[in-house]
View 1 (cartoon, rainbow, N blue to C red):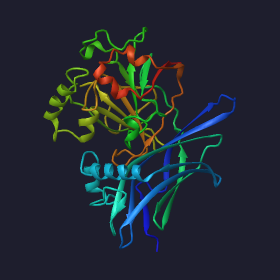
View 2: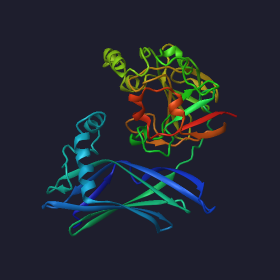
View 3: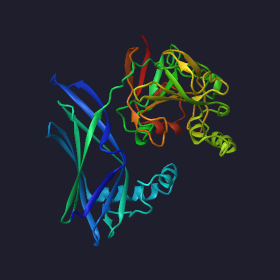
View 4: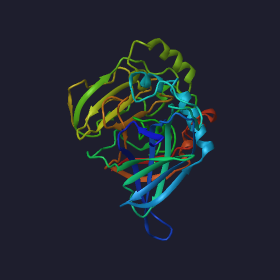
Length: 375
């Protein structure tokens, strides 16, 4: 009898972001990055089980391209994180309604008899001349091991997508980077859009109010044709950019009065673009949403104005995320590529030009800012 069982909440497939680039030697390489969300390790035996390591191998046509390792100490840290995260938002609410999540878990690499441990996420990436098609996860204990085979979906959007705003724009949270969005499930490949002026400034005053930001009140367009799944309006814009205490004070008045999605994402439009691609347009301006559930929309149609609503918004911007399901607690995030981008450059200086307070720069210090405009 195998002493170890590995359970993955999302069946046998993982969504990957795959990017090709040219190496210094002139050859084409592929970077495949994956965030595994929600893993449970079960001890099926009547004895305590001491886990030693985890191996994660990328395969192509059954050939191993690359293997990464998680040592015992790191495993213990992951299990402790998993133990704590199940009692805190947002996982505690999801765990209470989804039988996948255990009622209790151990908090170290030593798993008790007939007990379980939980890992909320593992990030891993592969650099190779081939695009991997399989990820093998293997868990080792003292005298036993167990494997889980996952098919890799190097996802490319099925719909042709247009940029949702007029530019020039800053797209913050490049999808290859490991930062805030990437650590979550449905928003994993989400992007934040900020409108800039021709000098690449995002606001007219340093100590700003919402209307000083060029993004605020700018039109938001549907990225593709589709049907509105749902929308919500009525939540006031946050009173002061870059002042989270004022935001949370205002948001507290709406807890229990609006949905969790609107509370965090602000006023929103969720569009079914077909092909199991749903896009959430979030943090929209109060009283600006122009569409409702059931409305048909065309690509490039104005659907709302950019705002600063919701607990997840520090400053006026548009949050965009594509998912494979309309319910965010059941959905997996999907990478997005836009077909009408022009003059694309990576800029390490953009965050400085935005005039963001020093105390908040750490929130996005590991992100990339991508400057784009519509072709």
